[in-house]
Image (cartoon, rainbow, N blue to C red; front, side, top):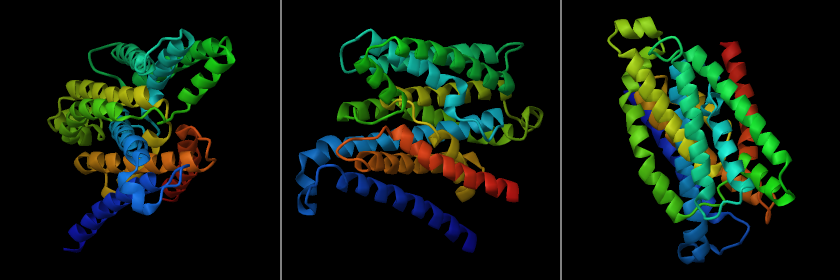
Length: 321
């Protein structure tokens, strides 16, 4: 009975941390709101609450995508942005800014289109030599596509005007300042399908960690599983980048924290990664809003500042083990 109780306590702790992070996001901010007025404040309902919920959805999506991709390529250092998606999305967004495309959805749609283009290129490179995705070629293809799109993005930014330059860099560092109820509804309707696809692949992912031959011997359909996992994880990442910009370290760190809490079985790891990723991004965004108020830091800077020391601690644990 001790083991199930300890397991339940871990899930309860993750839920409490997420709830606490959400409460802090609603209470804290540049504008002081008396506690008695929080429930009726337009600032809370129209600004802070949709922003906090968007942070949960984006952080959770990046956490789940990172856990899935690390198992797919069997590399603990893999994260969603290593596969070129951030470079493609960044190029699309910077092009939208440089071309002065109007409308509130121009930049997110351009970023999503850029991420999908990068996804297609890396996917095609990963199929070189056969119908089965090669994890090594997938990683190398992602690095190559990311380097190419990064170079083009830098060239465009270097020729941009000062205002465009600032907007481009702010977007490339990530942020949730454009959050709205419309954005929350859009991503809330979008992400359940790729999340379901990844959760349904939990057992095959457990087997893929053992290697392709072992997974095939134990009954997994290796080729189709790799394609489903890569596409679903990439689509999650593309949506997250489209609405929040490039937010690093969440997809890299969160899966390792999740494995430390619930183990490596993906049926438990993927939901845990969603909860942890959501809580981490909510806390990081709250810190980004209040650290230098009334100004605001890009949330990607905060996740990097938090993620690097945490990653160093994880490395020490691995080397000690």
